[in-house]
Structure formats: C-alpha cells, structure tokens
Image (cartoon, rainbow, N blue to C red; front, side):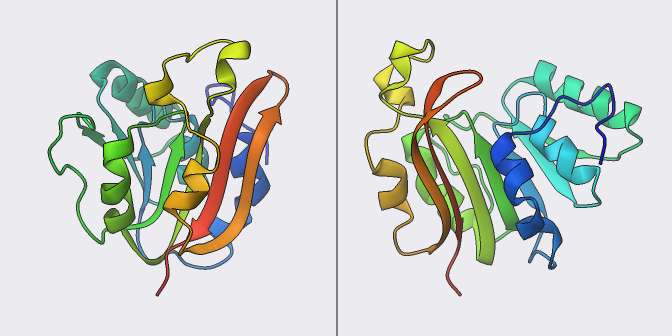
Length: 181
C-alpha cells in the first residue's frame, strides 16, 4: 500500500512483520510508546487498528493529531512523562506495544504488565555499539549485549536481531515476542 505524502515511512522492522498485527485480531488496542510524531502508529491506524499514541512531548502529539487528521484518522493521544518514576501505564490493557528508539529501563516491568496475555511486543532501540555511528551516546539509553532478549526470555520469541543495520548505519537490538497465556 502506498504511503500518503504526509506520512513518514514506518520502521522497516514493523513493515516486515506487520502481518503479525493484521492477520488475526489483537486482544486490545496498540500502544505506540514514546511515539514521537507517530510514524509507526499512524501506519497501523491507517490499516484499521486502534492505536493509542503516548509521548511526553505535547508538540510531538500535536504533530500526530495533525497528520492523523490529514489521513482522515481519529486517534487517541496520551501525554505522559514515562520517566516520572510513577506507575503510568495501565495493567493488562494493550494487545500490542510498539517501542522504537527509546529506552528507560525502569519502564520495562510496566511494559510487561500493560500488555495483555497473547499480546505482541515489537521493540527496537540502540545498543552500546551505537556511539561509533552517532547519537545517542549516553549508556543509560543504550542496550547492553543480550539485555533486550534477557528481559523477554520467558516470552514466545518470534524474531530477534542484535547488530548493525545500514541505511543509515546504526547499532540496534530488536525483538518481536508474544506474552505468554
């Protein structure tokens, strides 16, 4: 399907695995966590999935709403500080959670509990090898080797990658997994 001119292209990881989200009903809405301008969530909303866009930046969420309107989509946005130290994500609410280019380790237990059983997690972010390619450089925002896989080791693994991707070059780890029943 062609992308609208107002829509930024979604992640290649999401494009390669979108069938997992579309082929059978999800047990709840999709959460696009730390969504920025929402390119991944807008892609899914454009394919009929209910998506909640969550970010701490009201400016980014304004952009999500503006682009959704241009695409004829109705969306739900949540302006939340995910790094407040408080429990901010509702338990057992989402059928899928998307996380791209974001890492706040204390939030991992909330991500796990917010996803419904049999829900899908698609997570990709930078690793400690990223500084050779550019930002981010702060180790607080970079995954250690095997860290992402370790967090979800008891879940059904559908896809995992850790290494360098190109165009543009970046060091990432990505996981697609399903929460156990």
